[in-house]
Structures are given as C-alpha cells and as structure tokens.
Length: 510
Image (cartoon, rainbow, N blue to C red; front, side, top):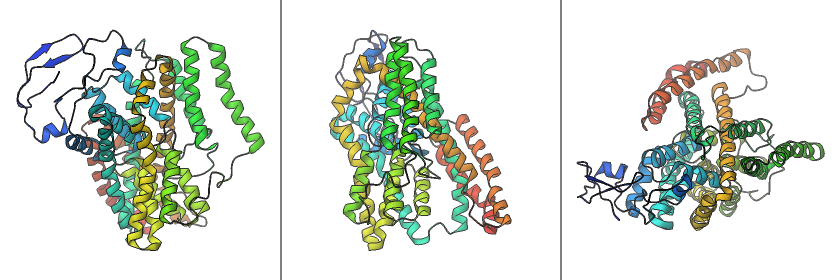
C-alpha cells in the first residue's frame, strides 16, 4: 500500500481503523519543505490492522516513509545534523521529538526500548538512533547514509575549529569572552533535553502511569554517579578520580534492568539483594584495590601520535564507550595526555568544550585530538590524523548498529526483556541528569583558580559566575518558552555576542 501526499492541499482520507489512516493517491510536489518533512511516499510492508496492545506497536513500521538515499541523506542532514546542538542528551531529545512525537515513525514504547538497547552498545546513542531510523526507511544502506548525514556537519566544523585553534589557540580575549558566555547556554540546553527524555522514561508502559520504581532507579543511578561508581566525567573539567572504568558503568546500568525484571514479577527479595550488592561490591573493591591511579586505564596504544596509533586509539575508545559518548573521554585522555604525553591537558579540555558547542556527537572531540596529534608532522598529517581517529571512533557503532539491526530489533520485541529495558531506560535518566548537573557546575563556575594567583585575579575570576548564572537562567527560560528548532542556534549567536559585552572587561584584567 502506498501513500502519496500533496503539500499544496489536504488529501481526502479513507479511514481504515482507529489507529491508521491511509490517504488516496494524489500528485506530489517535491520542494524544500518536502525535504524538511518528507511525505510518506511509500510505506514499509507491515501489519495494517489495529494493534491489540502496546506490544503490537513494537513491530509496526507502517508510518515509516520509504525515502531514496539522497532524500534520506538530506532529511537527516538538515533536521538533525545541522541542529544537533547541546550534546548527546539534546540530540536524543530532538530525534525523539521529531520522529516519534511529531512524525510518529514508531511508537513511543518501541523508541524507549530501542534507546535502552543502544545504551548498552558502544558509541554515541544519537548517531545510532539515526542509523536505526535510516535502516527502517531504506535498509542497511539507508542506516549508513543516515548516520553519515548526522555526523558530517559536526565533523567538518570540528575540522575547521581544529585548524583555527592551531593558528591562534584560545589566547585571544575576544574569543574567550564569547566562549565563556556560550558554556552556560549549552548547559541549559542539556538540562532542558534531560527533562524531555525523562518525561516518558519513568512511565510504566502497561499502566501508563509514573512508576515509582523507575524514579528510584533514576535517583540511585544519579547517586552512583555522585559516588563515582559510574564512569561519569565533566566535559569541561575532566578528571580521573572516576573509578571502576567503563565496564562498571555498563554493569551499573544493566543492574537496574535486572532489578526491574524482579520487581515487575514481584520478586522483592532478589531485587533487594541485587540493590544492596552493588554498594557492597563497590566498598569491597575500594577496600582491597583502592581508587585506581590516573593511568590505570591506559593500554599504552598511543605512546606516539602516528596515524596507525591514532586509528587504534579511536577504535579502542569507540569500542569501550558503553553507556554513551562521555565514557570515551577518560580513555582518550589517559592515553594522549597522561600516558602518551603528546597532548597538553589544557588543550584536551578545550577540545571537549568545543565538542559541546558544535552540532555534533560529543565523541567528535576525537577529531580535534587527532588533528593536534598529527600536527607535529605537518598540516597534511594533521588533517590525516583527524580523519583516521574519527573513522576509528565511529567504526564500532556503525558495525553494531548496521550489521546487528535485525538482532537488535528482536531484542526490542522480546517480551521477557521488556522489563529489563524499561528499568535500564529509567536508570539512564539518572546518568544524564548527573551529567547535566556536572556541566551546569563547571559552566557557571568556570575554570579553577591557579596556584599563586593574585587576589585581583581571583576576584575577577569569581565575578564571572554571576553573569554566567544569569545567562543560564535566561537560556533555560527561552528554551521552555520557545520550542522552535532554531531557538538553540539563536541562543548560541546571542551568547557569542553577549560575551563581548559581559566578559571582556573581566578577562582583560586577569
């Protein structure tokens, strides 16, 4: 069955059932608007009958448009690649709002489970979600095209930023002033996106009511982040007192999925024992092993920034980024900054900050690392280093998402695992909430003071927190008031201009 819509006038509707509506064929005009919101020219074969329960929607692809590869590329490039501001949390919220809430490609329960599955896969979840929807629309090749369309704008911008940085660095006070104003605005975007994602993640899909156990999972996961049981780091102030490595972050998320399986079956004792076990295990680890040293995660695979070492560094970091892009940060830092010593700590922090400001997956910071690492061999080698480390970083998520698409779909539809994914999705809210809090703190407080700084310099540094907090509140209010997709971009432009008036006098005296 095919549906062809005419953007010029509404089509007559034939009602098939209470859940689906099918339009009569009519002429279609391909214009810019149709590229931005593509008509459902051809729908995937699926069951057309109304679903008898929420689980039926887990297999329903009837609302997914069949797009050519060129149109699919433009759709994801324009709607998500160019507007992926605010980091992974904001990007996931944007994808859910457009494809699930507005266009209804798939049902909300199915999206929640898909999102949960991708949380336990390595790689940036937002890029993986784009690949997933691309696979639904045009098969595996469509998944590759959608993923590239989402990544390409941020990659090109980061490549440009890396080159500009190599020419001037961040010593220019005017550049620093704009950059200082943008940080709290980005933090506001992430908090707003966290709220959007949490709206449906703590809802019981059977009762359609708020589930207190899912809220508990979110809160406890946030507490685990505060205790550094999870591998959580601030993108503006990256440290390595975080412990138990990436593996424990994976375990922490999966644990609440298992606990929720027991809770959904009213097996309270096993659920309670597992809940206590995580903290007992953490205590035992610290007692017998202590807090790992800063270089305990290093494998020594990038002692020098050669092209092959940069590719392997990106490949290993991409393969270990379970639970999201933030878990790739400490691994690259320990290899490039602490173990290898070929990238200064201040430069690494700068690249994380730039990655949060660009419309791109956060792991695009690896492009910057590769560029700076390869710069010692000349400009051409720098560009080559940026390309190879980016290829290595994204290769695992492309392989898992594209090659394993059918298997992942079976996992999403598995009724036995549905409670596991619901619990995991609730726990993820805690992960992103603690990340949002860390970003808020570092973006408002700014950089830490230097040893031996003068009282005047300390006063000027502290005096930046007030204006930064005001910018944060204004940006947050604007994001709640105006829901247009151009709002984040306008806020960033406003922040860059406002920084010239707010922070230049302060920075000039430091």
